[in-house]
Length: 113
Length: 111
Image (tube, rainbow over all chains, first blue to last red; front, side, top):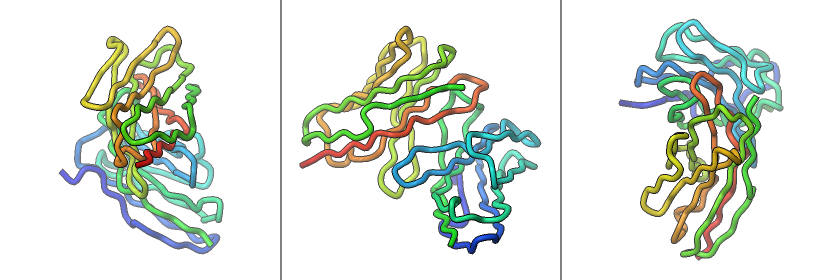
C-alpha cells in the first residue's frame, strides 16, 4: 500500500494563478480531508468528504474548491492564489469520519508570491 | 462545534524526565481520543489513542489517560529521549463529526 500520496511536494505560484493539489489514497477510506498548517500553528480543516460525491466545508474554506468523483482521489483547487495561502497543505484519510485514525500524506509546501 | 485546547503550548524537559500534555475538549459526545506526533518537516502520525470505554492505555514509554467527566485527556511520556522532540497534537473525535485538532504542543528534550 502506498497509503496517502500528494503531488506536488513543492510549488511556487504568482498571485492570481490557479492550481490543483492532488491527493490519492489506496486504503479504500471513505473519509478524506484537507488541512493547512501555517508556521507555529496547528492543523486547520479546509474541506472534507465523507464519500464519493459528497463534500463539505471546514474551518477555512474560502479560496479553495474540492470535488470527490472517486473514493481514491480528493483534489484541492486554489482558484486565484493569494499570499495568505502560503502554507503547508496536508491531505488525510480515514476509514470513516470522526472516530478513526487519520493517515496523512507527506504534504505540499506552497509559496504564493 | 468542538472547542479543543492543549496545554502547555511549549514544554522543555531534560532527557530522562517525564512529560505530560493535557487536552481539554467541549463536546461531551466525543468518544475517541488520539494523540499525533509531528517531527520537523514530516507529516503527523498517530502514536496512541483511546476510546471512551477505557480510562488508560499504555504503549512502552507513552500512555494516555482519560477523564470523561472533566472532559480532558493527557499524554504521558516517561524517560524522555531526544527523538521525542516534536509537536504533539490531540484531536478528540466522535463518529460522524468532523475532527478538530488542538493547536499543538512543542516538546523539546534537552540532552
